[in-house]
Image 1: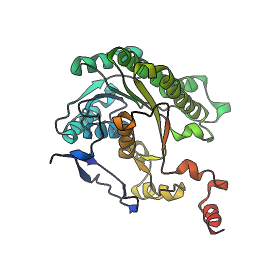
Image 2: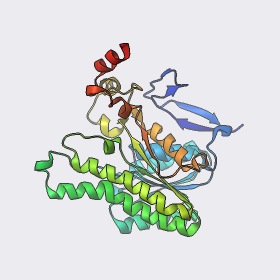
Image 3: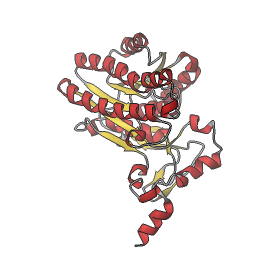
Length: 306
């Protein structure tokens, strides 16, 4: 029986306990456990050079999809590495890296044109790019606000409009917009970023409504606190491991790029054929725990004893 390798880190095993493996231990799953309808689908992913974008590419590849990894020219080495890893994971999977800036409409259109030239079509479109300046609302410069809107909201609009036009003309497809649980929270010094993430969620719902008649499904995935290279630039391994407890996450660890990638793969597969317009939080239960007064572990323990 053939097998496909899937990279997993910090994974919950059978829902019973925590398994931390900083070396990205590989587990093998039989072909019988592949998600339906994924083999040889063509997927294009923005922000693919590292972190969540890379995790999405690798999990789609592990399910047999052909991958087009798109990211900035400045991270071309990392993007090429993502493509190499995708080819290794997928066995017969083909994967290429395409340089492109998701904030530039012409470059987005060029990336899709190169994907179509290479594979003939695009079946799956995942928009990941986001970020921007943060600071107190009353001190925020207009230029910083505009930069955040451009990077965190408009990139999804350009990326998925180009994808949607192609899918409309080619018979359908699946889209995922990667937002953030910050869309449903209020945190100081993050007004522009959080409001853009809320807009991404609403954009996804509106796209789903409009594009269903073209056989295009659209969903939004909102990650919680995720262990990414960006986080590790500012934290030690011990800090990363402690954050799961310090943030009062019911599943007591940070999420991984693989957690996000596997969820995206599900939403893009035929297993999710009747799912569109949904906002899926992949946060270890963090948002539901916020409903507790003061969101404190001590408060939670007190309530559980009553």
